[in-house]
Image (cartoon, rainbow, N blue to C red; front, side, top):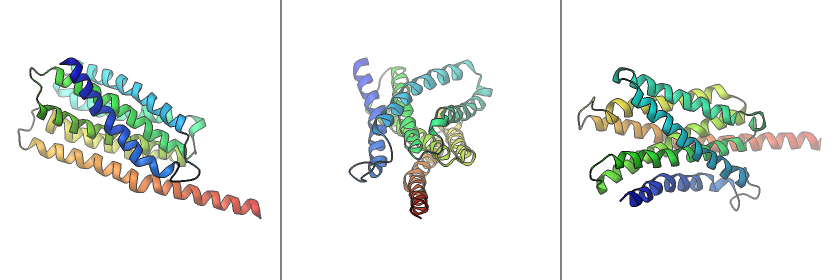
Length: 243
């Protein structure tokens, strides 16, 4: 049973993250473009780094939740959102990554890596605590995992875009607000029995809307505009050299 649970949890954690990475980045690498906007080796290195960070964050936050009281739990979880965003910024804001367009794509990869192991651990530990694990339970956990994939992918990409633009504060602030909003809807409405069914589903729906909006914005607006601005800057620079 444990082996099957491990396999299912791993699929639920890694499959959406890898699928979303392919779906989002396929337009920015070969064969869609002649010259890719990022290095594949660095991309998967950041994904691997995210895998490690996901396990570290899960272990730390699980310990924090069990060590805190009910009165301080929500405040603690909000603190986790800020801490996670600052950790991502510290890693992505190294001088070698500043004002470089590929940093945005590496941020996305790192965020999806974080979500893959964070989702895997969350599903495995949650399901292992149940006496009987049903298909409905695994579907519910998988949908929760998909939220984590969208959340970490979007917020880390936003921070990476801010570093790439050399304008960190607005993008970091937006990433923090999205993460905090998600936690505020999920924690009191869904993860704890503060609101009874079916009212707790309102929180689940609102949290889902937050992360879907955030990722769609990154995929449809933030990354394309970053690339467009970068190309315009390159063209202007080329014209100056030619003159």
